[in-house]
Amino acid sequence: MKAPKKGIAWEKLGFGFSDVNCHIRYTWKNGKWSAPKFVKEPWINMHIGAACLHYGQECFEGIKAFRQKSGKIVIFRPDENAKRMYRTAQRTCMPPVPVEMFLDACDRIVRKNAEYVPPYGTGGSMYLRPLLVGTGPQIGVAPASEYTFMIMVMPVGAYYKGGLKPVRAVIFDEWDRAAPNGMGDVKVGGNYAASLFAHEKAKKEGWPVELYLDAKSHKFVEEFATSNFAGISKSGAYVTPDSHSVLPSVTNMSLKQCAKDLGIKVECRPVPYAEIKKFQAVAALGTAVVITPVWEITRGKDVIRISDPDTVHPVLQKLYDRVQGIQYGTVADRHGWCREVKG
Ligand SMILES: *Cc1c(COP(=O)(O)O)cnc(C)c1O
Image 1 (cartoon, rainbow, N blue to C red):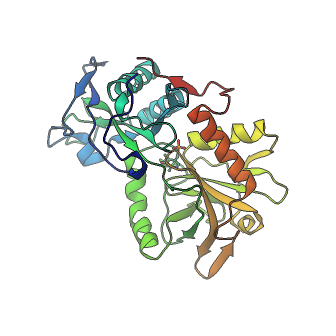
Image 2 (cartoon, rainbow, N blue to C red):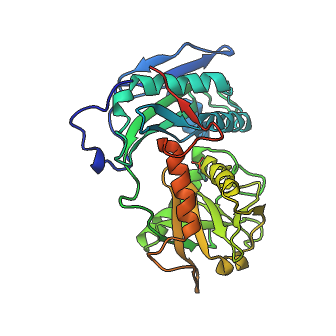
Image 3 (cartoon, rainbow, N blue to C red):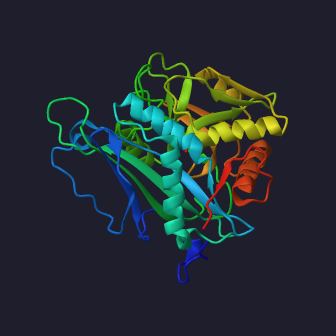
């Protein structure tokens, strides 16, 4: 496997696009997927009538690959992302990418860009962004006749340099993210379009993340705009909402397992808004950051202070260290979560 490329300031990398060698691309036509193609240019030439442009037939995934201490390059739980994209494709009438093809595509694109997987010890990783879009022209409302599956990759840095950094969150009762029987449980770009307005308002007013309550009653906690919700209860349990309109996060799934492995009780159940003030800690969970502690939540005049602005609850720290340890190969991978990319 190729060593990291010389001349890149790995420590300074943020979370953004950067040029690499290529992306991988497949097309679906007449009922079957093409062979893979590596494409150097970061452009897609598509029909102006493409279904993804008009009717939002689009979905994506987010995955990370790590250069471990031993030098191995591994991808973290891509099988879970493959299964999730399969479900999303079914929900949006797109041809699902077979799990084996998805995993093979991940291996191929990481191998082709191996020198862009950051060195061990810099806190960086390679971010993989699989996309499935309807590219066939479709003006009458119907599923497209052609699709494109792509994976783009880019090196990214540690989201927060210098460890976990608690943030403030806000709840806006004016906007919902996902309807009870809507698309909240699948990873479509449309969910992000639905939350952008509130997200921009939150950012402008000083809250890096927004939390959503259930759209029907506004009584139960669902998730943050782009990450799952977990709280540490008074008794020390890991509590996370059980709801049909929450996206099943691979990070949350992994943290639940790590909690069990550490002897921490896990509760997956409805979480009333009124319970938030009883939590010892609250966190936002997702691939990009793993865990973002939340120290304060504002809803109108209601300001819930959960913890100190700069202390991280020891349970959150322990869970974070365990997941990162498995990813970087310093903690035993008991559940076989790391998929090695062999050269
Ligand atoms: C992607 C996403 C998450 C996080 O999922 P991970 O698999 O942990 O990265 C959480 N919520 C929403 C709405 C998402 O789109």
